[in-house]
Image (cartoon, rainbow, N blue to C red; front, side):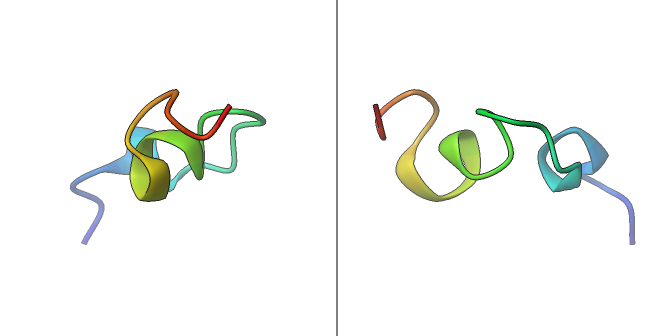
Length: 27
């Protein structure tokens, strides 16, 4: 269940940047 804990963790600037936009492609 916790395969991508690094991408599932609520990290400011990394939690939805490298999971939905493609790692730094949002900003």
